Length: 92
View 1: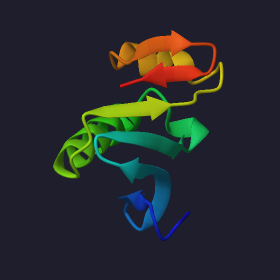
View 2 (view 1 turned 30 degrees about the vertical axis):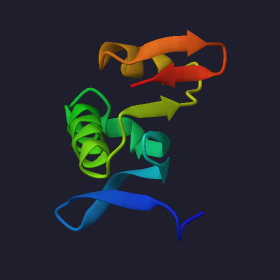
View 3 (view 1 turned 30 degrees about the horizontal axis):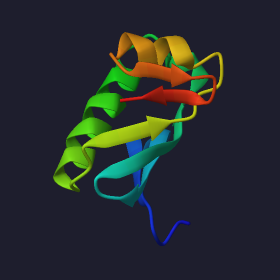
View 4 (view 1 turned 180 degrees about the vertical axis):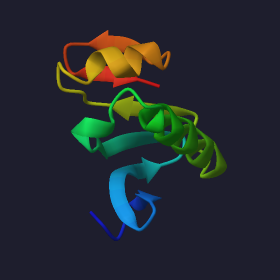
């Protein structure tokens, strides 16, 4: 999976504080493994990673991104204007 994915790491002063992966073939991709250090939540880093992921996904030719979110992360994705598609996740 790593070979087929675009993996991005958010670095702050040499510390890896977040990451995400984009997987799939255009036009549909998947946002995988989006993670941010818990003590940094609420400081804008999640939005920064989201915006970067959407920009990168468009550059890769994706017109839709599917996200399988756990219940704790779902409010974040909905705040980023992702749409709930069912019990399995949200799409951006």
